[in-house]
Structures are given as structure tokens and as C-alpha cells.
Image 1 (tube, rainbow, N blue to C red):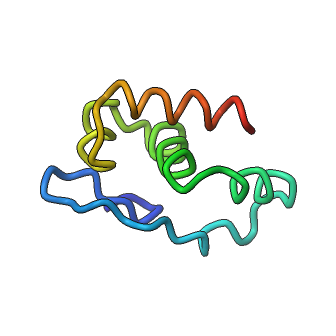
Image 2: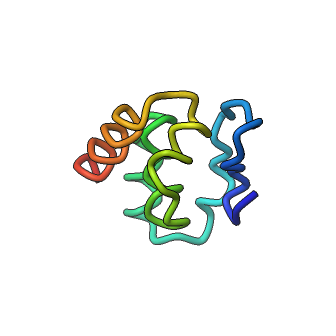
Length: 79
């Protein structure tokens, strides 16, 4: 698992994001991330913070790589 507790392995089931890691971030960033959908938040953080490739992100989120890209793109736009 990475520092956010997200495992990007093939055998991983989708998880409900645990927002406890948000504590200590800038209040505006914390609020913006909390406003994202769980899928967008997990996708953005795994991609931006952990530099997860889209194919691994798709496996971890149980979606297609195109959907993973969409969640990242929309999540970043909403920030």
C-alpha cells in the first residue's frame, strides 16, 4: 500500500476512501478534496501524490483506464 493506504495491486478490491489523511493539509485544499466524489478523490490522489499509472489506477478502482483518466481529469478540474 502507498502512504494513503491505497493498494494498487491487481487483487485489491475497491475501498471507500478514508479521509483521515486530510488532517494537517491547508484548509482550502482539505475542503476542496473533501468535496470531490470518492472516486475522483482516490483517483486524483493516487495519480498526483503517488504517480500511479492509469492502468494500475484502473485495476485498483475496478474501472477502465479511460474512466480512471476521466475521474482524475474531472477531479483536478473541480479543485
